Amino acid sequence: MNDSLINEDLAPVPPEKRTWSSWDIAALWVGMAVCIPTYTMASSLIGGGMTWWQAMLAILLGNLIVLIPMTLNAHPGTAYGIPFPVLLRASFGTRGANIAAVLRGIVACGWFGIQTWFGGAALHSTAAIIFGFDSAGETPLPGLGITGAQLGFFLLFWLMNVWFIWKGIDSIKWLEKLSAPFLLAIGLLMMIWGITKAGGIGEALAAASSETVSWAGFGAALTAMVGFWATLSLNIPDFSRFAKSQKDQIVGQTAALPTTMTFYSFVGIVVTGATVVIFGEAIWDPVAVVGKIGSKPLSALALIIFAVATLSTNIAANIVSPANDFSNLSPRRISFRTGGLIAAALGILIMPWKLVALPDGYIFTWLIGYGALLGPIAGVMIADYHVFRRRKLDLAGLYRTDGPYRHTGGFGISALLAVTFAVLPNLPGFLAQTRVIAEESVPSILLASYRQAWFVGFAIAFCLYLLFRRISTH
Image 1 (cartoon, rainbow, N blue to C red):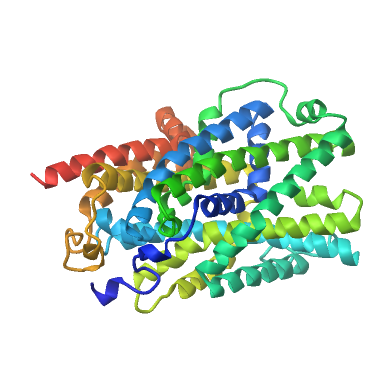
Image 2 (spheres, rainbow, N blue to C red; image 1 turned 90 degrees about the vertical axis):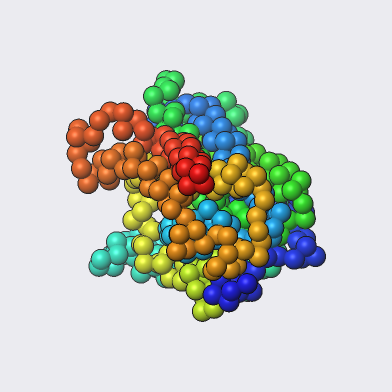
């Protein structure tokens, strides 16, 4: 093995240290899925004209679909004990793996910032309830667009995340396992509260939902739901490398991912519908809902649990991957801890409060946009490992600069070309969505392609990679 390709964090996990059971994997997913973005997920879909049951269908189907690449990419992690950036070396090359890993890591930094903003907002509201202050009249800070109090609690929650980064992967397992039952309980209690106050679940659902059925945006909604976990479908080996067996990783993920996502989104719909009946307006922000309950102790407790929910999601979903991804750039100089701190710093610099300010930007620019990038990478990874290599890897070769995964000067040309060609059809739609170019100048077929960006990119990259590898081996 070459020292430039390995450190303690990137090395294969030995069999005796693969101790995560199906319950540990399930708890991990409960901890990641129960968060404020999941709660508010259906709001953008219903706001786009869907009924509540259409939104639920899109969320359930999207998570069942993403479960497929999730379990397929988890396989090599469990089989060989390797993390995501090391697995990338098989298809992208020992040096080319850094390109795909950093792309995934940058998306994680964006998500880290978003979740940290939500967590800071929960702490802010908690303090306002306990101490009775109101920062609504404060003047936003120049250039930032948020108040000093909002910034302060954002940074406080950021420091809480940094503590877990410093403690390492074992603290993350502990956090997820401890928080999972409490997170589900608070969602259930909020739903019971909403149903009781609204006079029944039927009243709540009717108040939350669009009155007409429209399937026009269902494809885009489905793509966005897949895009929500398109990130983890790539770097799931970072966790599955600790699983006891393939059965544990498959059962744990299948039992917890689609069920928890659908349940917590449904909680959001019911509670929001109840707010229409109770308060006369739809309040999709659970932090704002909790603030209106009327009981200071209960409101403060609920907000603290929301903060824990956000923390558990953030650490597992948005720090483990970039920590390993940045470590892979220079294993001798960048450890898991250092990589995590780099990701945390970038999470501040992106100013996440601006990223989530507009729901349209959140769904169609953020979720679908990065799905157009990550779908092709998933296509290459699955085509390489499950089809081209038939699940057989040279473990020692993954850590050698002169080994079988050097490809062309360290770069897997077939993988890089497949990803490039798969991204191109979705690029015009993305540029139109971000208003870099006029939407009228983009052919309608390319606009439609962008609405299904993850699926289009995955399929093109999957097929092209196998074609290029077949050509290169003849």
